[in-house]
Structures are given as C-alpha cells and as structure tokens.
Length: 221
Image 1 (cartoon, helix red, strand yellow):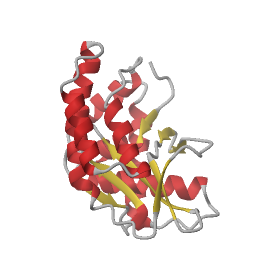
Image 2 (cartoon, rainbow, N blue to C red; image 1 turned 30 degrees about the horizontal axis):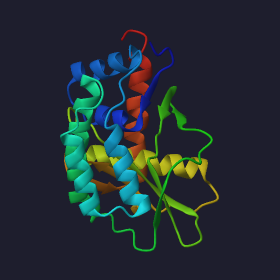
Image 3 (cartoon, rainbow, N blue to C red; image 1 turned 135 degrees about the vertical axis):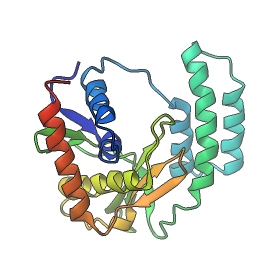
C-alpha cells in the first residue's frame, strides 16, 4: 500500500481526461493499494531502446518480434508478455517515422537525480524514457511512452503527459533550453505522438487541480 499521495505522469494524464467520478476514484484506489507489480513489455522496451539509440533496423526489429511471438521460454506471464511485446514493437515501428527530431539526438534517460516533483501535496512521479539532445549534447526535450493497452491515452491525455515532461525537465535542468516541440508523449496502442502544447500554463492548471482532488480523496480511497 502506498501511504504518500502519488501518481505517475501517464496516470495523471488519464485521470485528467476521465469524466467518470467512479473511474477517477478507482484510479486513486488502485494506486494507493498497489502492492508490487509484474514487469510488462520487458522485451519491447529493450528492442525500442535498440531502435532509438543503437540503430536497430526495422527488419531486425520485426525479426525480433516474430521470435518473441513464437517463444515458449519463461513463465506463463513471461510468455504472454513476449507476445504483447511483439505487438508493441510492430505498432512502434508504425509511429517511429513521426519522430522528426532533425538535429536532435535521442538517449536513454538515466541522468536525473530525482524522478518526481510535488504538486498540490501529491508526489508526481515522472519516468522520462528518453532525452533529446542538441548538437552540444544539451538536453532540449524528453520522450515518455505509454505502453498499456487497457487504458490508452487520448490526444489530450498525451498533451498532458508531454506537459508534465516539459515541467519536469525545466525543474531538473534549469540551465538548459527545453523546447516544447521536443517534449513528446507517445501512446503506442492509440498510435499517437504528441508534443507539449503551447497552452502550457492552462494544462499545468488542470494538472494542479487534479492533484488537489487526489490529495483530498486519498485517505478515503
């Protein structure tokens, strides 16, 4: 059970776009009572990293997906995850060409001393999957990927998640020049790749209001 009010970047995006009060309460309750978890899309994450940072080709990635789909290695959960990973890899390849970063270079994000920020009493955890760097290797943006199929993000949800990435990067790397067009949220199952919107302050107000609501209802969840 999680005692401190907290929520992830992708979940706050889902929460903000969920109109049903029952579903919003369920999101809070699920996060609060979460006790351990299965790792999901393990192989997909490794292959996507190889595509983005090591130059793995589409053909190589598709071959890996086919091998995962036919694999009988591991537990029942691990075998199922391999099949789900194969689907994610194929869907990612359909989105990959939209990553028009021009002079930007993508790196695996592992350089942050913190992975959260506090908003209205709620610890907002931010897992930046990849950072975008300019020719001087300065961070200019970041990418967050939503892998889940059950509750995919809408276009507005992706805008909110990308907004969180922008705010987080501006907080943790104030000496850099973060560019909103390089603060990206990708929802693989909905086929969306969305940059942080120009209406940055309005989106942050929505996130702030949602965090206030989560903080208010946390104890009763």
